[in-house]
Image 1 (cartoon, rainbow, N blue to C red):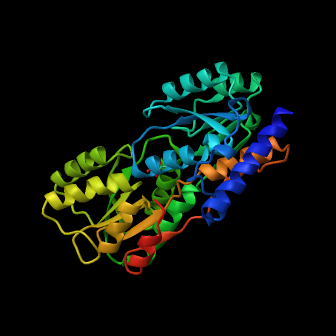
Image 2: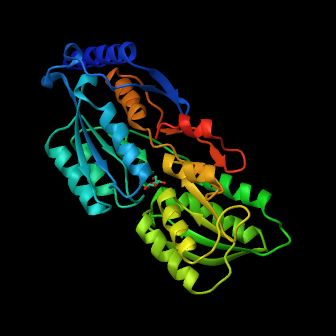
Image 3: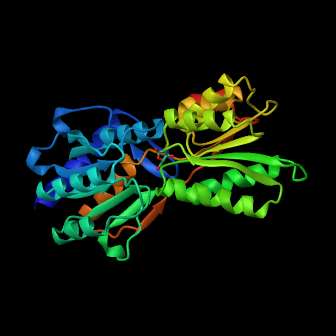
Length: 341
Ligand code: AHR
């Protein structure tokens, strides 16, 4: 009965949201606006679906957009109560948060995992408590796939493949290409997939020379610090492969401070991942030559999975989000205006 009431509340909320505001699509999956609140569509707290969400932290523009997407989706108006826990980039904090969610007897646990490994024990506890676990954004590596219900996120290796295919096309294969590789959080799917693609291409292309490879932990400050030290070493650099926008922002600061020109006709080209609005402004100005999209708007995608599970329907074990890339040679102001985050 409680389940039926919850589904009704969610259905009403969706109808209200769609009629009051815009219902649109993004990245190949449906999105529902949650912007308008209405007392008539607010469910009693008893009827709300309680979702405990363990978020990585606030390390990047992408992460902030992801948090906003979750918060705007899992509202009381939409039939949910969201318990949000920021892990501040520490897996121990995530595990503690999941244990708290189990104690609180939430209806669903949603985890955006920092790293792929280390999840078995706590997921067994969630399974014993019969709480479905949805993994979002990065992936986890477990021996027993039944420890989580489903996953939705990006194909990080494919993102990397897109970037290196662009590089292979763009750069002259008869000249040495000196590459600086700024990696993300080591052990995260985003780092593993994007690094794997570049590693394979360096192996394949004899003229590609790896000048430096170091983590910038997905933050602007660390990206800048690492880039400064690479520039100080005096090595020749042609391209910086930054595994997210914020590290690219830091690298650009460092390159400019070193008196070097960036961009297609400059000394150094910067390639980035995520394609948050601030980065796309730099694609438009040419400071980032290529930005591969990683879509953070997972709130409606997770809600869609929960709605199906509540209705007793099957869900796909893994759902990959459609993504594109933006080349500074073709990117337009109109595309920038359309960007939602
Ligand atoms: O897991 C997605 C990655 O995590 C994004 O590329 C990065 O910006 C974020 O911190």
